[in-house]
Structures are given as structure tokens and as C-alpha cells.
Amino acid sequence: MARQKAKTEVESATNNGNGRISTQASSVYDRLRVDILTGQLQPGLKLRLKDLIEKYDTGNSPLREALNRLSANGMVVREENRGFRVPPASSNELTELTRTRCWLEEIALRESIANGDSQWEERIVLAFHWLAHAARSNNESDKYTSPEWEDHHREFHLALLSACNSNILMGFCTELHQRTFRYRNLAEVVEYRDRHELEEHDELQKAVLNRDADLAVELLKKHYTVTSEILLASGHFD
Image 1 (cartoon, rainbow, N blue to C red):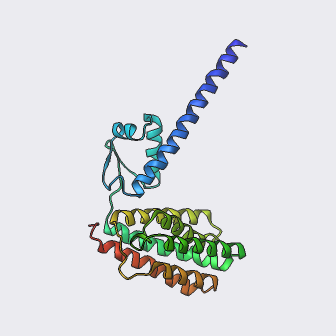
Image 2 (image 1 turned 180 degrees about the horizontal axis):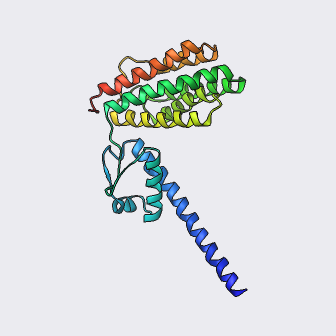
Image 3 (image 1 turned 180 degrees about the vertical axis):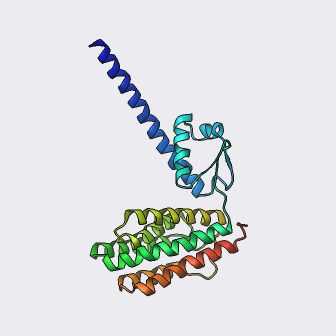
């Protein structure tokens, strides 16, 4: 009995320890991911474990778990026998990201338009409402770059695709959105020329709600292509 009790206590302590490590790893994962996406950790930066442990106030095990998870989804580059590094940013990758987004989101958007119900339509209308509210609430200089705008911008685009009936496809689309978001932050674009982003989203919303798949796809691709051209013209990427 005593031996069994001791075994149970050891297993309980071990499980609790693993649970704490896993929780810490998730927290560090989220913080690292945000710092990479927002450009706080610059492209190509060597991620030294000692520095990260101090910066994120964590231990070696949860940090390594977080880095391995980030490496698995391409948010961190793992170099053989050299540790981890923030992924580089290049014009070629941005162009590829944009092209791939257009391919995948066309499929998701057409499927959503074909299958979406009234709840899907309501989600789009509500998402656009808050997007417009964010644009009106912010200063003219940062109306399309504020954190509030970015949050509602992400929700609007994901709402358009949310009736595609494929969690896998939505996962890919979400990842590509995040990677493009990183480029927007790295480019430090404040003024979008004479572009009217809110109007672009309004036109896209109307085409989707009218179930005009061809027009919706055309507007979506144009929207992404124009954004990519502006980011490339910023001169921040080789």
C-alpha cells in the first residue's frame, strides 16, 4: 500500500509538472508569435535561448516546446545544430503568399457562397459593421493600421470564408492571413496612397451577400494584389 501510494504521489507530481510546463509553453508560444507577427522580433534574428528565457521569464523546457511548435507551423526557422531563428522576409515570399492566398481563398469563398446560410450572412454583416466602426473611430492617419482595425479586418475576412465546411482549409487560410499580417507590420506602411479600404470591403461584402461568386473572387484577388503591391513598393523587402 505504501509503495502504491508513493507511486501515485510521484505520478501526480509529474503530471502536475508537465501541466505547468505545457501551460507556460502555451503562454510563451503566444507571446513569441505576437512579437514575430508584429515585427518586435525582426526577420533573421537569432533566437538565443538564454536571452529568451530572461525576456519571457520562463524556463528552458517550456521555451523549447514553444519554439518547436512555432517551427512546426513555419513561424520560426529551426537550423540544424544552430538553434532557432526568426524567418526572413522577402519580396519573393510575399508574392508567393499573396498568390497562394488567392488560390485557397477562392475555393473557400466559392464554397461559402454556395453553402452559407442566414447565420453566415449575419456574421459577415456584423463583421463589416465593426470594421466600419473601427475605421470611423480612428484618426485618418492610422484608420487602416490600428490594432482595432486589424482585429476586425481579420474577423471580416475569416467570416467570408467561414461557411466553406472545411476546418483544414480554414486553418491554412488563417495561417496565410497571419503571415501576410507580419509583412504589413514589417513594411511600416502608414498611408495607403489614395486607396479606400473600407469601400473595397463594402463592395466585397455586397458581392458575397448577392451570391455573385465570380465578382466576389475578382474583388478579393484585386484587394490582396493591391495590398501586396503597396507593401512591395515600401522598399523593405529584397
